[in-house]
Each structure stands twice: as C-alpha cells, then as structure tokens.
Length: 152
Length: 138
Image (cartoon, rainbow over all chains, first blue to last red; front, top):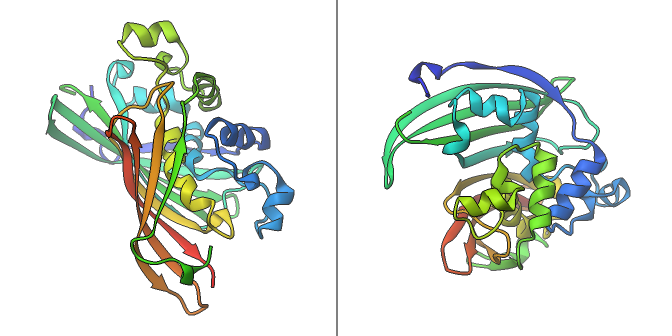
C-alpha cells in the first residue's frame, strides 16, 4: 500500500561507488562501444579524468546507496513484484561520473500522485535524489517515477 | 561531431539486434535486481512473456548511445528526461532514433543541443522516449 503521507519522506542517505569492472560489464551488457566506460586510458585520451560510469547506471547508484531495489520498492508496496514499474527518469549531470569514486546520495519521496490509467488506477511515487562527491561537489540530480499499478 | 555541423532536423539511428537474454541476466546481477522475469525464463513464461524482460535502464542506455558516441567526451551529456512506455524482451530488436530539435550556441563556439529521442520496437511500439541535452564543441 502506498500512503499519500509518504510524500516528503526522507530516504536514508548513503554512500556508493561503482567499481571499474561493473562499468565495464554494464557497457558490454548494453552493447555500448564507448571505451571510456571500460578503460581509464581511453577516457583520459578523450579529456576525462578517468574511467567513466555509463549515464544509464545513474538510477542504480542512488538505489544501491539508499538500501537497494528491494528497500526502495518495499517502501511503496508490500507486494511490489506484482505491479510496480519504472515510469520515468529525469537527470541533470554536473560532473563526470567516475568509477572508483565515492558518492554521497541524499533523497526523498518528493511527490505521490494518483491517476486513472488505461488499465485502472495507478499511483506515481516520485523519488528525488542528489548525488555529490565526498567533498560536496554536485555530480548529478535525479528524479525517478515509480508507478504502482492498482489501488494503492 | 562539431556543434556547427549539426542542424535542426538531423536524425541519427542505432539498432540493437536481438536483445540477448545473457545480457539481461548480467544486468540483473549488476543491479542486484531480484525481479525474476529478468533472469528466470520459467517465471517469464508463466507471466506470458516471450522471453526474459529487459531492464528499463538498459533501454535508456540504447536511447543515449547515439548521442554519447558523437560527443568529444561522454561527460558532455548534460541531462535527459525519459518515459518508459512498453516492455522489451529477449530476442527483440529495437532502434533508437534521435533528432536535433534545438541548438543554443555558447561563447566558446560550441553549444548545447537538445534532442528528441525514441526507442522503437519492431512492431512500431514505443519502448522509451524523451529528450536529451548535450554540449558539442566548436
């Protein structure tokens, strides 16, 4: 069940880093031929500080830092595997996402909205995250819309 | 690719042929995603799926790649907005199409380019769409 009073709930903050091998395998698994996601030398040749994390891992970073998928989804629904999906993502990047770099993630459930969809009632729970370095430099901001199908 | 070489209306495509189940399983492991249809064929079949269910962030990756590969530096991707509309399954082929919608020059001779983006399945259904902003050099 999703209670509308979840709106404004702070998500426990956390720290996370993407190891080099994870970025490499993510690039492989998504058929991405960008070598800056695999090798520091290639990234530096392009003017980057070091091996980069693919942008599409941005949701993974914030979820893992704040308890993982299970914890994130279980806040919204006891039975999330039966009908909770990722509806949308919005990201603004401020700095390269480097591998082997610790990030501090803070987040909140910023909005809960009920709608009538084509297959019945649904609830959209928007999560807002800020990602920064341990020195406080902003890396990216992310909003993730989780859609809970049914009468939540 | 240079800012001045891009024009409003320019379109780029990239096709991912036959989404591989082994990739879907690998992504599930990397994400530590316990949702069974991403890695368990029997569970996917019980749900009536034609194969393993590809993860949303993988579909997002397909949408961003035609732009990132044209940047001087990957970190010049400034941001994106995306909506997930339809599921993609193992064995399906998807095509990402990005179109230059707007150009905003900057003082250094380069500029920020706004793209519309869509990932389409073979049946014509939209899996993912949205917009992407990136900075191109002079």
